[in-house]
Image: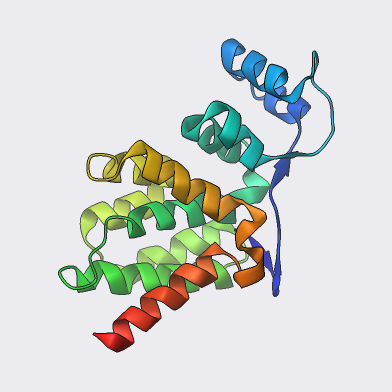
Length: 184
């Protein structure tokens, strides 16, 4: 979840913003019905609502259409990749993803993130490709080993406010991995 300083930012869009990017007609109608609306408006719409109504692909599409949320888009890609990395057998990917999370937290723009992450260079090719291509590539690179339900759960945890009390999902995941590394 994007963070501004220590404050976790929820991600919002609007029905008008979604409509402006020409969504699939049936998917947009389903979202309107879910919300009890008969037309698009400019009321803030939490992207978790899009996920719960229309599923993983539609929330990923929504994030891709909102360039101001590039950190959430890249962060979610990193979380998807984490779902397949075994720290015992794939230490290179583990270290690479830890470095990517640090770069993401420090980057001011998507271009900064991509340049810094390319400079890391020592990742397994699938991990590096997925991180650079973004969440779509990450989603499909892990989808053979990780179920759709698991990926949807990762997306909901990452995008929802339920993890705010613990410092956000990225912080929680990082703390868990650090604790595992110390115990190993």
